[in-house]
Length: 430
Ligand SMILES: NC(=O)c1ccc[n+]([C@@H]2O[C@H](COP(=O)([O-])OP(=O)(O)OC[C@H]3O[C@@H](n4cnc5c(N)ncnc54)[C@H](O)[C@@H]3O)[C@@H](O)[C@H]2O)c1
Image 1 (spheres, helix red, strand yellow):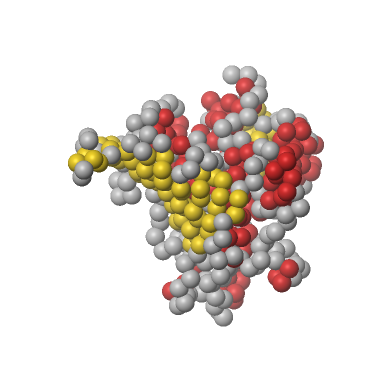
Image 2: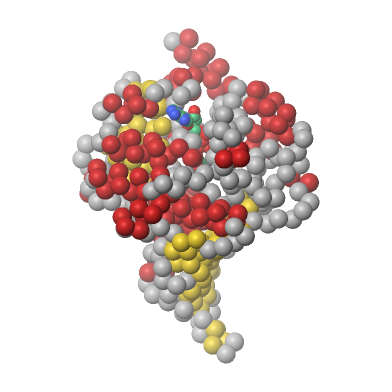
C-alpha cells in the first residue's frame, strides 16, 4: 500500500459513511466540511483519532488544503458544481449520487474530468451487494446469454415525521426532488451486471386521483417514478424508484438463455433456465450469494456491503491512476436517465435520447440545457418545470413540517439535538 489517500468529506449526514474507511481501501480521513459548525464539533470529537483532522465550514478553504481527494455528500442537486471545483483544484472526486442535476452540468463535468485528468467516480453502491455481484459473475460466464429485459427497483417509504426530519426546510432537495431523479440505485445495477448503457428514456408516474392516502405529506413528489430505457445492446430495462408504501430492492433480468433475480423474501439469488416447449432445460437454483473477496469487511459496511466496495474501487483507481468502472460517462448516463425521464413524464411519456457523454460533438448539444425543477429561495416556480404531477398539497402539511424542523433545529439526516448537546458537554468537560 502506498501513502494513504487523504480525503476531505463534504456533508456530515450520508458523509459519515466515509469517515472511517477500512485500511485496505487506502483512504484516510483528513478533513471534513459542513456549513454547520456545531456538526463539525461532534465529528471532530468522534473521528479525530490522532488530533490531525481538519474541519471547515467553507468548501473553498478545504480545497486549498493538502487533501488528495474529496468525497461529495452535500446536497443532491449541487454535486456537479462541487465536483468541478475540486477537479480544477487538483483533487480526485468521489461523488454521491447523483452526478448532476442538469444536462449542462453533465457536459461541464465530463469536460473537467477530461481536462484535469483527475479520477472521478460516482459513489453508486447498489451494484456492489453480494447478490448483484453474484448475478454479474453468472452473467459474465455466459450462462444467461444476452440481456433482453431487465428491471430494478429502489423504493424507500418513510413516515411523514421522518421525511420532515430528513428534509429540513422548504428548499431542501428532498422536498423538491421529482420521483424519477433518484434513479441511479436501480439503473446502475443493471448497467453494471450487463455492461450496457441507456440510450433512450421514457418516464411515467402513477396518477390516481385520490391522493388522500398520503396524508400530511409535504414533499412535492409523486408516489413513484417508472422509467423505461432502451439500452445500447437493444434490451429494455424498467426501473421503479420512489416512496411507495413498501420497500423494494428487486433486481431481475431475462437473457437469451436464462434469467436471474434477487428473491425478495429470502435475498437469495435465483437462476432460471430457458424453457423449451414448456419444459425447463435445467431446474432452477436458489442460493445465498457469497462475496468474491473482502467478505468480512464488506459485510460490516452499509447498504449490503456496497459502501465498502465504492471506497475500495475509488482508492484502487487513484493508486492505478485509471478511471474506475463507475467513471464520469457512466455517472452522467445513469444520472441523466432521471432528468430525461422527468422531461418525458411532463411530455406525456415521449422518448428522450441520452446524450453520448464521451462524445464532445453530441454532448455539445446539451451545454446550455439548464432545465431544472429544483428551486432556490427567491426563484419563481413559474420559471421552472413542476416537481410533481399528481401530488397535491395538504393544507396542514407545511405547519406540521415546520414544527418538526424547528424541534430538530433543521439538522437533517443522521442528527439529533441530543448529539450536539452531548458533544458540547464532552468538549466543555475536556
Ligand atoms: N448512496 C446512498 O446509499 C446514499 C444514501 C443517502 C444519501 N445519499 C446521497 O448523499 C448525499 C447527501 O445526502 P444526505 O441525506 O446526507 O443529505 P443532507 O441534505 O441531509 O446533508 C447534506 C449535508 O451537507 C451539508 N452541506 C450542504 N451544502 C454545503 C456547503 N455548501 N458547504 C458545506 N456543507 C454543506 C449540510 O449542512 C448537510 O450536513 C445526497 O446526494 C444523497 O443522494 C446516498
